[in-house]
Image (cartoon, rainbow, N blue to C red; front, side, top):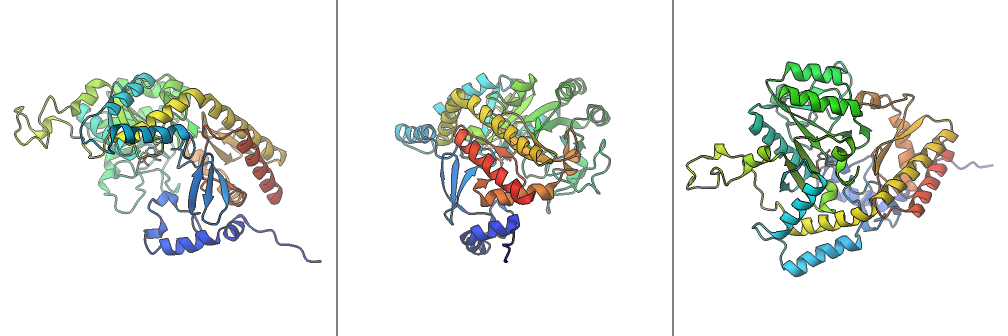
Length: 460
Ligand SMILES: Cc1ncc(COP(=O)(O)O)c(C=O)c1O
């Protein structure tokens, strides 16, 4: 009797995606690693998509997937939502251009909406990415405090530039003590200068954080954090409240990087959920409706340092205000406040204002269904997260509170499960978090749970 061999997750994946494989061979001759953002790569080659519709993606081999990556959370109304497409079309037709190169109506309209939903953002500036928004927030903090170091938490990501590309995913044998982490550079080409100018803090450890901040209070301009680490490990309420108090006391600004959590945790982001007012906030992803975007905002006395009405900036050749560029914080960008992007973002917010609860309900349903399936197999797994994002952590630990805790989880099993899920039409990049959208309904949740059930039956 012949027994059919059970394929591993990767073997299944390779079997289902031969055209993706061929495509990847070509793309590796064009882009380093075949990708134009390192995060888009996974072994042995990433799946190549060719069409999106609602909650679904179709790859070049014709496989259909329920999309839980949703472009790393950016698409909260799914692919090609009619209201978002309509908003884009309306802007193009009514305004007749993609770009004014001058101030325009939608900048104000979006700004008013942001002020309404995020009262801490008394003034805003637009950027072209979340990266640029956090970058500008750090410059704002330096300018306001006239201090030139930044503090960030271990395991938190704020974009790919030198000041913050430290200790995002550091090897534990180099990372130092949990309550006083070493700064570890996370890329070739980052100037070691930043090892001395970026201070790394332990998340959810208020005592140690307070001690480090107090030690460096004369040098640190701001603490930047993801209120929900990686989009799924929440700051404890007492930690968040303590952090707000201690930063205020020490004259250090508090920057909320809400690029992931903005709109996804609630319309008003983590700051609404926690009831905490940061000094500065960076938004991105969802607020662009699928287009590249970032928004930075905060207290007007900080933000107004960038106002070219008070002092001459670098492009004012006449220096007509009797001042030089050093008297104003420089912020510019050809595409900042792009009208089509803001139209897509405003249409997205309009949909979310009506349907966000639905997304939360579907997320809760999926989270508890997955937990039940793991429990039925006797596997200790948790679905960790708030709002519309969660991650599956397979661990013996009762409470995952930090990067260090996460390192104790079973990444190997999680990865194996993710590759099997891919072969069954559930898409997220292996090991990534899950994000839902307004078009992830009961049917999608049921289908996803069925795929989990099948996968766990294969493996156990
Ligand atoms: C918390 C956080 N900050 C900043 C960024 C950078 O945003 P972008 O990729 O739009 O530059 C990201 C992107 O994933 C993020 O998750």
